[in-house]
Image (cartoon, rainbow, N blue to C red; front, side, top):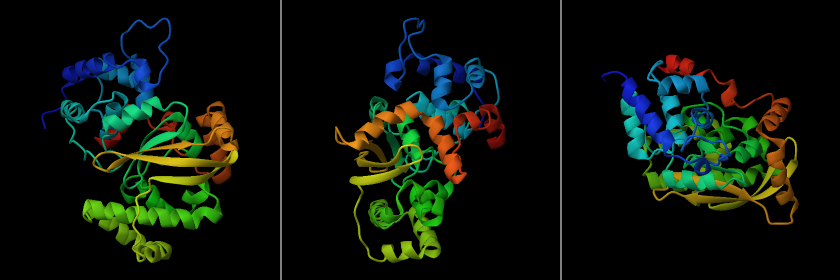
Length: 310
């Protein structure tokens, strides 16, 4: 590695920022906009960084960006695979895997669709149910993902190893979700050819969860495409919704969104989500289970993240 190309990195970030229109990422255009693309503070907001830190990057100064920061910038700037790889090259960081894990590069087609879903909760997840990106309504509905790596980043893994992961669903629905998760994981394992990541997860879950082991031995196989869910929200109570999945062409990622039939109580509750707001939801969940999911505003500043991961 030859070190960070600060000037080239700064120019590249600005060029990618200039090409994105606010409407492309769900932001209002506003009558006084003087730049053709996004403002610096808007990119920082989308990436969960401080505006000062991002400004320093575009000025060609500051510490080497961490892998986490680069992943966030690639998503905020809607970079395709080649553009993301170039960003990592300029920052002198190893390129992370393209399809798997919490640091996976979100496939542009799914990300474009997510940008259009402004009135319904939606998120993009990996085939192991690791949340890659959410819209604000999804964060309000189910909470932000915990900052975990490895198998624990998978909601399926936490479902069978952490009782607190199940509080989002009514207790009487837990057996159904367990069966669905295991059947889905069986299909993913078959598609991936039982690669190391899946094999280790399955072995770990079999050792830690008798429930998982028993369900795995049934050999039921079914990708989850649609489902009817009852979600326990700390403010709105029980919400009945339909959950839909759109798979990427390679099956590694999924766009997941929630709807409710017009005129139902669930539809009315979805409308209230935008009024409640993400922060109110987080406060309510913190009071109910003392497990506040990390907010970008509560995370270490991006330059601190860079020092931690350097």
